[in-house]
Every structure is written in structure tokens, then in C-alpha cells.
Amino acid sequence: MTTPDVGPSVRMDERIAELRRRLERHQQTYLLRFLPQLGADERATLVGQLEAIDFDQLAQLAAAGAHDTPDAASLVPAPYVPAPPDGPDESTSHHRAAGETLVRSGAVAVLTVAGGQGTRLGWDGPKGTYPATVVTGKPLFRCFAEQILAAGKKYERPIPWLIMTSPANHAATQAFFDDNNFFGLCRTDVLMFSQAMLPSLDAQSGALLLEERDRIALNPDGHGGSLRALASSGALDELQTRGVRHISYVQIDNPLVRVIDPVFLGLHADDAGSSGRMSSKMVEKTDPAEKVGVFTRHDGRTMVIEYSDLPPALAEARDDAGRLRFRAGSIAVHIIATDFVAELTRDRAFALPFHRALKRVPFLDATGLRVEPDTPNAIKFETFVFDALPLAGDSIVLETRRDNEFAPIKNAQGADSPATSHQLQSDRAGRWLEAHGVTIPRDADGHVMAKIEISPLTALEPADLVAVDLPKKVEVGAEVAL
Ligand code: UTP
View 1 (tube, rainbow, N blue to C red):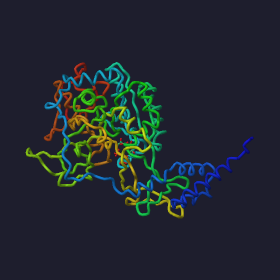
View 2: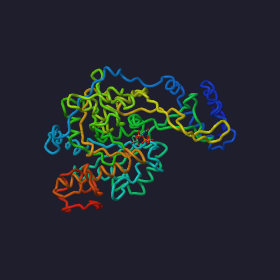
View 3: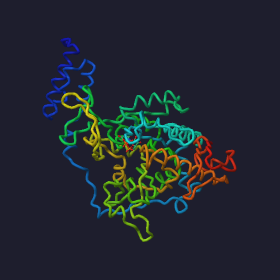
View 4: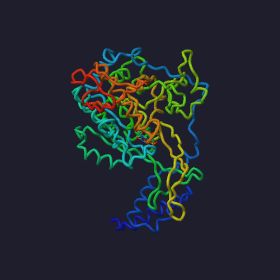
């Protein structure tokens, strides 16, 4: 028996009829109101988008309300491994040797999450293309690429680099890497994959929003989506085939972050207090109002409580020495075992909870006019990677100095902006040079009064500068790039 030949327009009509029935069940047929005005390609775009939506899941998310936060009274500060001089010494610690062995044997990859929308910075393009360094204006992607290149040379083993994009910036990210010849990295060692998107919902009615006549408004599903996308994209299988057991997880917005840290790797993989599944880095929070999550313990499990969920009484509580009790601020740096990612993503029901955020999302009104809201009008749903911590069992939190590896670029101005990041970059570079006898000008607050940039290809850590020809002195206002 032969199947009758069904033309593409008949098949599209059938798909639309089926879609309309689904949308009726969820009271969302208005999403098809511009369909008669669309051309064939636009129709296919809208229908494809709507077919991919799990309306039952969305209805559950919308009905679920805010995620549960543990009762504040039951929270205690998470213990952490202090930074030197009280913690493991950078050069002599046995953890360093264990971490270096892992890198040398090819058991470590880097994951940079770069799928965010970067709305606060307001940069036109993927955030990784933002010129971030203080003297030469290197883009963020290059800051990471040079570290990975330098670490690969130092440990005589190329390090795979995973980059999570979103469907909104994937093509632009790929083009940037092509234009820059992958920054000298081997193309097969750079694995890009896209995270999933979820519809944004009108905050009042819970309805989906049309961004264009042929497109609904979608947002990336949060940095927690990286775990699921690692698995669904096939990147996790690829890592496991290559023998990678640990993923160094970092965010695109921090040009100072150390992407390969042997001491941290060694602690994570080898320490008696670690399950080897997921570890984290923290910096000491000194201002109770600083907008970073804090590491806490609840029911014996380590977890990050977002700053907005930490009651002021806890955020401001101090210990006998006058330091904040909840001072372990998360800088979104983790090591995650590939086996743990496989465990979390084995079932269709992904283990991480959804958080909701109110955002400004432009949309088309009933007549097709574009509305640019002045105030947040839509709910977006996201998962956060740190929500995997309570599922990881014993988990290490390692302290690092703020001026060593936390100079985020989030906002165009003010806190966590290019200006604050530039100062921190010069402060760290100045400290590295001072360790080798270079005279550095500093102001009354201890900030370096010059612009200094040290490429990771010159030095990954202060000790590497021993082989470099250094100036005796840096003058006030000078610009030095090494
Ligand atoms: P942020 O929370 O700073 O969000 O992301 P953002 O989208 O970059 O910026 P705003 O809030 O719109 O201004 C922290 C890190 O997580 C990544 C970002 O790219 C950044 O590296 N991220 C965030 C994703 O990869 N996907 C997401 O869905 C959200």
C-alpha cells in the first residue's frame, strides 16, 4: 500500500489544527491571532515554537508560586576552607599536586556559562565579546581563552573548553570565535552548546507574550540549565569519552576568575571532607547589603541562599570577632563532577527547582503594536546551578581573596561595572608585581594608581613572573601591559 502524497501546506494546516486544539485547552489561542497575516516561513517559525512548549509544565510553574526557602531559624553558616595564610598554601599544598595530576591526565575541562541576556550591562552582542581588560581592552572570551591556552601549555595537556550559549546569542558567539581564529585554541577542544529557552509569562494574567507576530517572548532557562544542556547536547558524553571527570565552572562576566586552580581541584577531588561531586569558592562578605548569595547549611546540607531571601537579621548578624556570621559570599565558581551531572540529568524530571524573576519584557498588544514597558511586566523562570549543591553530599567551600579573582562586570555603571573591575584588575596585577620587588604607586585606600594588565600568557599566577623581564617601578598614571 502506498501513502497518499500530502503537500506541505496540507501538513501545515494539520499541524495548526492540532496546535489550536492544544492552545484551546490552555486558553492561549490568542497566540495565533496574527497567523492569517504571516507568510509560510513565519508561520512555520511560530508553529514550531509553540509546538515545542510544554504547556503543562508552564501551568505548573505558574501555579507553584515562589520556590521554597528553608526556615531562616534553621540556617547556620556553612564551614569553609580559609584562604592562605590560614588555608592550604598555594605552592606547597599536597592538594595542588593532586589537582595538577588531574589536569595533566586530561581529567579536567572548563565550562563558561555565557547564555545570559546581559541586560544590566546593555552591551549589544554576547557578553563574552565585551572589551574587559584595563589596558588592551581584551574581550572577555579572550581572557578565558588565554588562560586555557596557557594552562594547557603549562600542564602539557590541551584542556577542553565548553561554552554554553543561548539560541539568542549562539550564532554571534560562533562568528566571534571564527573571526578570532578561536584565539589560537584547537577548534576541536572548544565545544559550544545552547541552553534551553522558556516562555516569559505576563505577570498579571499568566499568558504567554508575543514578542513579534511570528515569535513568542522566550528567556534562557538560567545558568542551572547548563547541567541539563550539557547532557541533552551530547557534550557530557563527549567529555566522558575523553576521560574528563571534573568540570571547572565559571561565569563569563568575571575577567579575573581563575579557570584552572590546582589547589581547588585537589581539594574537591581528594579531600576527606568532599564527596567529589560539587565544590565552590567564596569571598568574605563585609557589607551585609552586598548582592551575592551566601553559603549556608540546612539539615546538614550545603546550600546558597540568595541575598534577596536572606532575612536582614541574618544578613547583619555578627560573630564575637565582629565579622558577619553569614560571610561566605558565593562568586559562582564551582567544580562539578561529570558523573554528578549525569546523575542529575538522568531522568526527564530535572532535579533543580525553578526560581521566578520579574523582568521588563517588550510585547505586542492585541492590535499588534509593540509595547516597551517601563516597569517589570513579566515573570521569567530560571534554574540556578548552585541549587545542585544540597544534592551533592559533602561539599567543599574554599575561600579566595576578593582581589584575587572576583572582578565581575554586571552593570554599566556603579558597583560591579567596568570601572570597578578595571581597578581590581590593576590592584591584582600591582600585587603580583610587588611580590617581585616592583615599586607600585598606591593611593590612601591601597588602590593602584596606574593601569596594569598581565596577560595569562605571561603569567597564570604570581610565581610565573619570575621568568619575566619586569620594570623596577610603575609611575602614577602609567599604562603597563605585560
Ligand atoms: P547573570 O545572573 O548576571 O545574568 O548571569 P545575565 O543574563 O548575564 O545578566 P542580566 O541579569 O540580564 O543583566 C550570571 C552568569 O550566568 C550566565 C550569564 O551569561 C553569566 O555568565 N547565564 C545566566 C546563562 O548562561 N544563562 C542564563 O539563562 C542566565
